[in-house]
Length: 271
Ligand SMILES: Nc1ncnc2c1ncn2[C@@H]1O[C@H](COP(=O)(O)OP(=O)(O)OP(=O)(O)O)[C@@H](O)[C@H]1O
Ligand SMILES: [Mg+2]
Image 1 (tube, rainbow, N blue to C red):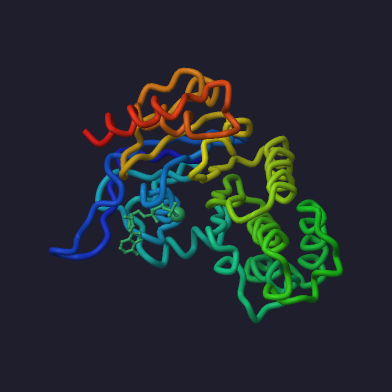
Image 2: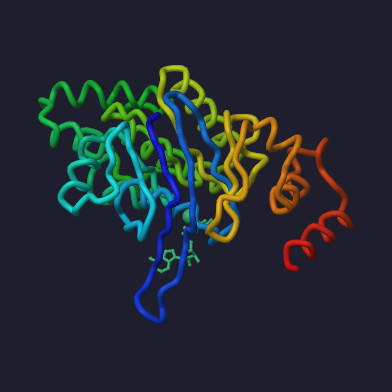
């Protein structure tokens, strides 16, 4: 197992402003597996990702990364874990994954230089990963602000890959992209899975991951209400919220329900 999360609770805020963002969440990811993590806005998807990287603390539960129990880690240990790069997180906003003042080349080599690579070796690897995400080398001297959104997203993915992670968490990697760029990102993820990299692919849209993910986990109001093989979740959803997601996804038309059924599912959820 590359990732094991058990019974994870995460809170934000203190005292009277303390609110629970994740409640009893359990999830596992095997090597080379793509897990789709689905849920509406505010359901806790990014919170789960942040918890795995130590960017927010769990109030209870357990997180095991690549066989190492990281739950009680101190700041210094979390930083060391992130620097090792076994798990990489590509932020929802690709601008956050990239330093605006660093050229694409510098962004790509930086994680390698801090791990002791020579400049020449790091530059060679950076070029290799740039071509793996199907970008042209002429982009290397530009700044992030001089790229299109789709190019930036792919640079962020390339930067996550240079440390040869076993697991990459992609937070809404395709939501902001047009369909051509979206298809390219999905193809890149499939290629990398074939090379043994595992992914958590976060999306609010079940339709965009149904054909890609091996397993799908559904978050609803901070709780994982459903998890299973992608096909089972799509053809035989157990939770009302999952049924609503399926009936609302235009690409899952065959399983799609009419407006009346969606209204019924919504009122059932609200009850
Ligand atoms: N830094 C923070 N401080 C306080 N509350 C937060 C913080 N970050 C997130 N939250 C709250 O925690 C809940 C879960 O947020 P999270 O960002 O995990 O949702 P999400 O599923 O990623 O949503 P989206 O699809 O919009 O990205 C939300 O209610 C959000 O308002
Ligand atoms: Mg989010």
